[in-house]
Image 1: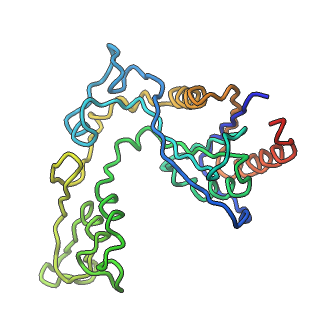
Image 2 (image 1 turned 90 degrees about the vertical axis):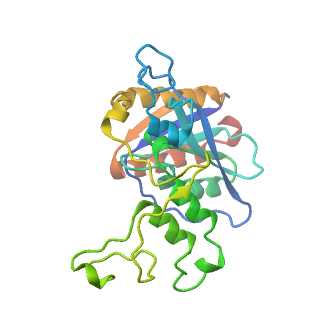
Length: 268
């Protein structure tokens, strides 16, 4: 039987599941693949393409191609190619990591019979993660392991990249009531520049609406074409689509799990 893939569009999701088998290991990888070529999007090469602005190129490097799909794929280490893949789509303000707990629980429960792909929204490509990456890269340094952490802990530095301390009136009592002293050192700190992968030392890159006019063409149609390409390019022949909002998603996922468990592995 041909492999099947189920796409579940979820706007908000919460599902409690029991822990799976204790043995084995859940692993993840991030996959960037070609998406639907939406003609207004930077990188399309179409006559209607909106050129990427200088700040977008500063963030991503040139040339820019935003017709891309990013998936976080969760699977059981050492398992063969699964017969069923469940694609979870986060909703408004969500991302692939929103679905991380349920992805891990499902894969642990099925132990190789199921793989879960969580899709990031297209705008996630334009998130400036420099501060978060800096915080994560050095979070186990000695200065971050004390209580409270030292003022030069990378977690504080990563946060300071996005947010300077705030000093409200009266200005001569920092840190006073209502003031923000992010690193708890009693000294007012301005926004902290960091050096990115291109060797540029800078603050966070923020975009105005005129730089992102192509977002208007990233509607449901574009997203469904992206998701269709994801399953076709990975060699899955069949696509089932279920759309759900809020907690309506929970019984749909539960029903999907029951149906998969009832079918012998040889027939999936």
